Length: 399
Image (cartoon, one colour):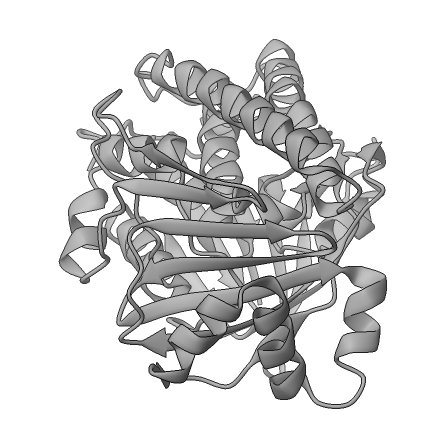
């Protein structure tokens, strides 16, 4: 089966679905594919920072997040060995609260918005390669949908297929920045946990976090990856309880009175990276092109930010626009990755950790200012000089 589209996006999670939605709103014919199933959950810290809430508001999607019962977050507490520091979420840039939706909520909202915008979505499709023209430019993908082989031609192929991206591997995207540290995480979900906003607790060689989300609270314990592998060698559930007690006996006792909703799950850790984000006929977004340790809970915010920056570059479709995407993405990401790397190393004193958190906060503020300064793109589009073969109609509205 062969088909031709303006853009094929591989991966229908938050980065891919958001990119697809924005391109379709610009008038592009977009195919969004994923090897998984619609509406499923995935590993996530859930937490949206101010930049992500700003974008969901601008896209008209925040009301759906709220309507799904996602609790508003008005404070963030950093608990250190000698003191707790609580930060109130001040109303800025139209953002009055933060949110931490389950991924089965957020990803579904974004996919539904993409479909409403005109995106064709197919699940159960596994990519097995890219196709190239005689000039070496990527011209599409090959994939399997059950027993059916697909050959999809596209003016641009976007890899939004997460860690170990098939598209990143197929195009040979090199690392621009490589981290050094990684932490492992054990987490579960709990009912009736008294928590006011985001809560992060740090002690030497370990940390704990509590994130209020839909129908419960995600509580995680994090340790350096080397220690994680030793901790879970026998039984993850007992290791989880043991690590929670090590970080905070008070919190461990608090969970004793709560009801655990789901089994303990884990992530052994991954060293962070920033890959080259664009090339002839291809681009990367989300974890496919940029990943940092979950300890700073900024991954979804990264994904939505870069989805918008990439969609704007694709709609302009000039060398300058793609160069600007590369430059701005790297500029906004590098320091966030470096600070996250330092935090995930657990090689800090209490005072050093507080300095790292202040540095991270400063970078997030810079990121929000950059997002808030983006002008409405106008949504005119040309693809590779070939749009005359299939004229594109500009979207009549942004929703």
